[in-house]
Image (cartoon, rainbow, N blue to C red; front, side, top):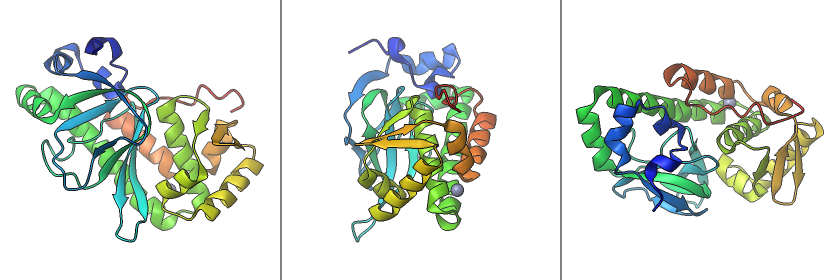
Length: 248
Ligand SMILES: [Zn+2]
């Protein structure tokens, strides 16, 4: 096991003051998460929390009876998966799945709960994150109900790029369709129209953000709202992916 202090690439953990981080650090375990790993299933007790490192992305997924799925939240280096809102070892409501594999830190939920009792500052930090995660899911409700697929897809790509930190997004159209809860044919059409604007370029299994500014202009306001809320509630935690694109 690598020493926990060496790879605290997770921005939510990084933003803790040294005293608060010390309450968790000896129990943080560095792990490598494989794509497709199920972190928890609905109804299972969430006994550990994952803090994704740079480039690692997980989703909270809702599975419906007819086999359809939809993503409720996309979580990367700005956040944590499991046991944050529920306040510990409680049944999961969604499935937690690793979408893009990579490094993460794992922590037992009871360790976090004990640390919260010892430090109001630490409790406040995670309550603030819970607020941001709730905002993300609430905004998704409005976005899915009201906004066009073009704008939703642009927003989703920006959200993913923020978490990955690069211009190349290794995604299949089937995967995007599953995450957005729509048919693949719609996704193909919308990707085609985004490509025509010069915002993205597609090649087999990869979407490249070639002009981040154009993609931001295509996205619905949900992206900027959430980003602003995150920056206000947890300053400095949300990653800034606006820099890497050269043509923006
Ligand atoms: Zn929207």
